Length: 503
Ligand SMILES: *[C@@H]1O[C@H](CO)[C@@H](O)[C@H](O)[C@H]1NC(C)=O
Ligand SMILES: *[C@@H]1O[C@H](CO)[C@@H](O)[C@H](O)[C@H]1NC(C)=O
View: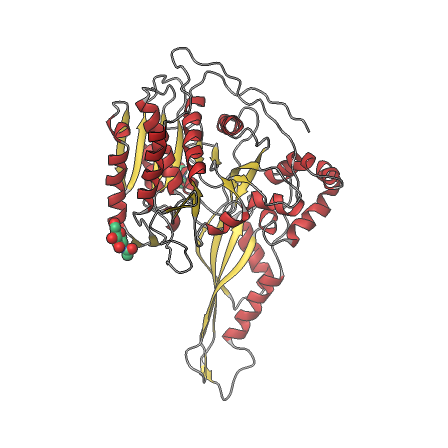
């Protein structure tokens, strides 16, 4: 994900309130489709060794995005060759079309046997953020295995998904599986630096072909474990939205002068006041009726008194809960647009009043606000015409994808989570506070779900974009199993069936 923050939503919900309940869904009821016998997700010892070795080798190719203009294209090209060698069945299948898009991204079109079923898409990204070796227990691009973990940049974000998707498909093909429902696999190469050459081009290509998707599954969203004190059981969070963002530059121009006879106000002083006002005046608390409220209600019964009662009665207690949430800096991200001062530049010489002062602020926009609304608020808070506002780049939050009983993508995820992780009985909607490539696909579907079938605890949460990123070998195998099951679940006859809420 393009931000360490990951899906704090989940965390937040968790952290603060320590809430959780049971919404055990029966999900999709399914009988097997005739002619498509279900293939058990059991892999031989040899296959299991091969799959982990394949991931290790993928980690060793340093597909780093240093900046939007500086990607390791040698590594990206090498990666393209690499997947051809490890997944021969995927590249050989007559019903799978492979295309390279934007030079280094990959699009696979898997033609299902039943054209009446609307296709879906699985997404992941090949590029990783830089990893200076400092502080790592093993070199970040070594892919070394130690104590049951595979180490390296990309093991959690997001080569695990790239490899697990292709690996699961490879294993299904080897077992002669022919999908009924068509699907796409989109592997972007510049997600960490915007996705404009990868995901955006793939999306444009599919739009030009008139493709409409039933749903998309991308990264961001995990099985959250041990994030909330008092909540022993892990729960799954599927992100149904994603925050927007604005990079805003504030600039003040003044006549330069000598420091021996300073004016009453300088560009630096005026700018500092404006920035300070913005820091002191948080954007409004938007705790409302969105996915956050639903997630809290679903988690309610997992808590003891009085948290359970409070969360079950948010109609009454929301002011209290929203206040509590803003006190913690992680849960705070879930209830409002955040304001982060990231750059401040002025001055060239010790004795010159600087003519120009600039500051850059990064806003992360809550799903219930827009870029325009935030800019309007900023203008009112700054309330000084001498401060110019320049939008460097901005995009609105993503629409909230449906997560009701009829939402096919959400229900398939829920069903697969419950079969692969029987110990997890709560699946809640969340908001991704980072950003993913899926934001380039909003024209193709209203159902965008972000979920990695991986346990996330506070420790490995910090390793994403940090040091010692690693994945348990077992967790990677389970990831492959999840995709293997998911593809088969998407091929079953049934539309989502109502599930029981035991609230
Ligand atoms: C880019 O990747 C290649 C391997 O494909 C590697 O040899 C090289 O060191 C990498 N360059 C940088 C700057 O990381
Ligand atoms: C979505 O479609 C509209 C209208 O065709 C187009 O202007 C816009 O650029 C598209 N957005 C994306 C993200 O592809």
